[in-house]
Amino acid sequence: MSSSSNLSDEAWLSHVFEQYRRPLLGYAMHLMGDNDRAGDVVQDTFVRLCAQPRSQIEDRVRAWLYAVCRNRALDVLKKENRMKALDDNAPSPASGEADPQRAAEKREAADQADSLIDGLPARQQEVIRLKVESGLSYREISDLTGLSVSNVGYLLHTGLKSIRTRLATID
Image (cartoon, rainbow, N blue to C red; front, top):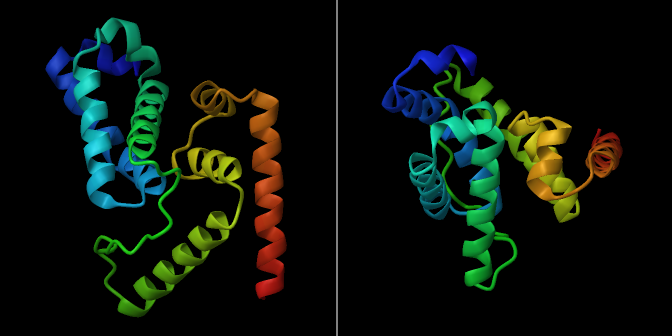
């Protein structure tokens, strides 16, 4: 984010918020299973970002945000004596798709992908979502989860292989 180093702190925070708000909401939603609680976790993540010295996190802001979001979500779930929300009945945001048939097909494909990922062990789900949905590198996922880089690679490989196998039986 070297081009943003010329921005004021307020402008930089605004830029970070705009860039990472939606991806963090999606990640938190998968962890929390509830839009409102996910929004609270992401809001708390950005509040904590505002309290951090920019110079200490600017070069690793994405990994920092995901780590804080994850830790906050796990704290909330632990407090509620829950390890994972199983029910995801939250309404999906409007797709903005002009063709309702195409929008329905996209939503169905996304639901199928979510269902396949949800059928995996929790660690595989987490690393796949961090890689595919959030675009984190193996190193960033490793730092975030405490797993080794090779273990992240193994979990991604076995999880995706399992999904491919399940997809082959669907067709």
